[in-house]
Structures are given as structure tokens and as C-alpha cells.
Amino acid sequence: MSADATMPPRDTFAALRIPNFRRYILALFTLTLGVQIQGTVVGWQIYDLTRDPLALGLVGLAEALPAISMSLFAGHVADTHDRRRIALLALSALVGCSLALWWLGHPAPIGGVPLTAPSRVHAIYAVIVVSGLARAFLQPARQALSAELVPRTLYSNAITWRSGSWQLAAVLGPALGGLLYAVGGITLSYAVDAALMMFAVLVLFSVRHQSPAREASGEPMRVAILGGLRFVFADRMLLSALTLDLFSVLFGGAVALLPLFAGEILKAGPTGLGLLRAAPAAGAVISSVLLTRFPPFAHSGRNLLLAVTGFGLCTIGFGLSTSLPLSIAFLVLAGASDMVSVVIRSLMLQMRTPEALLGRVSSVNQIFIGSSNEIGAFESGVTARWWGAVTSVVVGGIATLGVVATLAWRVPALRKLKQLKA
Image (cartoon, rainbow, N blue to C red; front, side):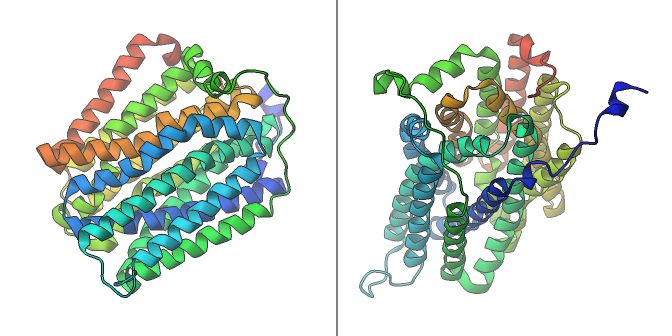
């Protein structure tokens, strides 16, 4: 009998058998559902008010700049305070942002006087800036918190469920956002968004956990804040993985232009926009289900490079497509490829980082990956204005392939990386 035959079968639901982690996943799912509804409606609203692709990119920039500016400090806070409490406070701030967008969605929110289109756009940008600040504190706290809720041997299973639940909400959220917008307009959409955010706060509050006490390092705050950056730049393998995703997302930011593709190229309207926004996450959900049974960690480096290659090719295909079903198919495949890279990179980060540094390293990951979505959205908006939407997306996909080829050549250790396990 082989060694593999004597091993117990893989428990797909191992991490979910832990009550606190189940509650964490439910809170994450509900939060993400609200965020995706909000993102869909904000994108459509801004484009409807401006008809300018650059305005769509500025939405991403308005969230990314404050998130980047506070990320390192937020990571330090996550490593020195109770991570659950920080996540609750940041999530409560996001509830306030959702309520503000709901209020601004009314025809005359200020003293019965209707807002002009430019004033309404500026007010929405201001709310998005506050949202970016809240997100800066939420991301490292919640990511580090998830590692505290499960034993180290379940990290890979927990990361797959965490990513999969996020992606499932990202499938449902855009479609629901498009439906709500079509049925009840802006105010109904933002009301549902705010209600989901409030529910996420209540569920996260029910997680009975307190971060373990950590001894003070004795370092000056400036030195401690930069600890995550020092760690990442000292770990060539982790730095390469983060760089790969940074530039692939930066150049492959087609999602920011979906309102333009839905409205002008594919003639699909708000409902089509919801389907397009949901498509990458649908692919990611399918991929995540498979990954719970067939983890991609036996040849981690090779699989990471192949996944990002697939993402770049699908981005090019989407840019060239003039058919709604074909465009959805390319986005589904792009999401499936991206999910593989997310799971590999997330496990690499969590396995190679000491627990006391998880918040700060997660904040560096947020700068590299999370904010690159918004900066990539800005880049896509600028290049779409210069070259047109189709050329912008195709060139971005080609640039992604160039990044993969460069890192595969310059960092052979990443290409040869084998097993990731606890």
C-alpha cells in the first residue's frame, strides 16, 4: 500500500468546523457583498453623470491614495492592538460611508436643494476617500485576524475558503447591484448596501476572540512601522510574488472600464454591467471549489506564473471581444486564473511571515496588491482616454505577459518553487 493510501482523506470543510472562523467568513461574505453592490452602483452613477472614462479611473484613485498613505501605520496598529476591535471600528466607518452615499443618492439631499452633477460627483469622491482610509485599517487587521482563528495546519484550507467566500460575494454583489439599480435606482441600491454592512458588523462582533498579548519590541515607532517593508524586501521569493501580482493587476485593470464596455461597446446597460462585474468572481468561485480538493501547492512557483499568464491572455481576449457572452467567458477564465495566484500568494505570505509581523506584512501586501486595483483603474482610465478602451485593455494584457516573462527569467527560484505547506 502506498504512503498516500494510508493518509486520511482531505477534509474540505476543516477550517469551517471552527465556530469563530465560520462567523468570520459570514462577516467577510456580507461585507464583500455590500462593497460589490456599492462599487457597481458608484461606477455606473459616476459614468452616467460624467460620460468620461477618466472619471471612472479617478474613483479608484480616490480610494487608493488614502489607503496607501495609511497602510503601513495601519499594519503597525494591527500588530500592536486587538485585531478584531480594529476591524470592527474600520467596518463601522464603512457603514457610515454607505449611509452617506445613500443620502447623496437622493435628488435633493442638502436642504431640499438639488445638487448639480459636478457637486454630486465631488461629494461621492469625498466619501470614497474616507472609505479608502477605513479600508487601510480593515484589510491588515482582518487578514491577520483570520490567521489567529485557525491552527497553522489549516492555513491553506482557511485561505481557500476566505478567498472563495470573498469571490462568491463578488459574483452575487455586482449582479445584485445591477438588478437593484434597474429596479429601485440609486437610493434602493445604497440602502441595501448599508444594511449588509451593518449586518457584517453584528456578525463580526459575535466572533469571540481577542488577539494574544504581544510584548513591545522596544523599537521607535518609525522603525516598527517599516518592519513589514523590511521583511518583504529581505525575502526575495515573497517580494517576487507580490511584484508579479502588482504589475499584472496594474496593467490588467479592465474591470474599471466595464461601465464603458457595457454601455458603448457591448450595448448591455446596467444589467449587463452587473453580469460583467460578476463574471471574474464567478470564475474565481469555480476555481476555489476545485482548489479545496486539488491545492496548487505541489509546484507553487510554476502554477503562479501560469495563472498570471492565463490572466493576461484572457484580458487581451476580453479587450478584443464585441460579444457579451464571449466577453463574460473571458472574464470568467480571467477570474479563475487570478484565484489560483491569490491562493498561492496568500499562503506564501502567511507561511513565511512571523505572527507578530502579519499585520504589517499584510499592509505591504495591501499596498502591492489591494491598492494596485485602484491605481490600475486610474491607469486604465487615462490610457482609455488617450488610446480608446479596447487598445487600453489589450495593451494592458500584453504588458502583463511581459511582466510574467521578465520575472520567470530574472527570478528562477520563483519558477522552481515547489511545495508550500504548514
